[in-house]
Length: 169
Image (cartoon, rainbow, N blue to C red; front, side, top):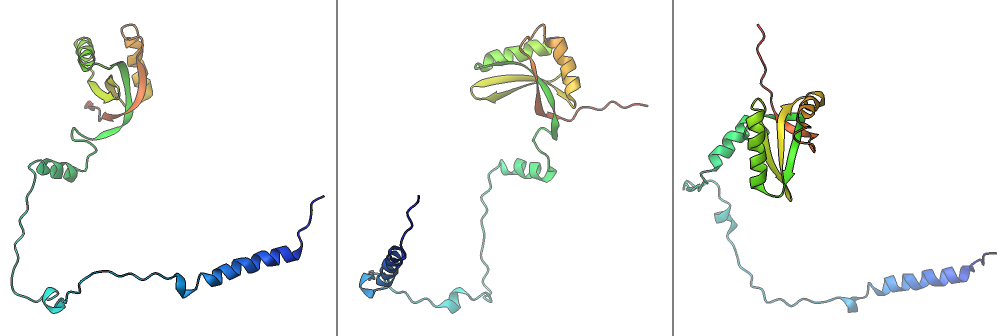
């Protein structure tokens, strides 16, 4: 059976808390700050007078690379290379060595020149990804062609370049 607390214990506790709050309002606990600051009078009519006839000069120091950034932002595209959209690529290889990844890319392009190949870095590996496919089905079709040469290839979602559309007449 739980023991009930008498009302006088709760009353004693509340009176103790309220007396501490009252004591905290005491002036004896306040601190005085002595700072050695100097007061400076400022003539605000001079500093805020916007009706003066004197003209100021502004010098702009601009980095040469800012021109390409300004052009890129003006195009409102997602990358400098061109517009990127959601799509799929086939990752055929990954390794810690950039030179090995580049040789794998070159080997792929010599056999499959109709597809583009890309190397990107995701620590600690360089990844070789190929193709620009709008659908997973298209990427899976290429994967089936490559599986005998690249047994670890997989289809991954990626930002791809816009595919070139053929003109039908």
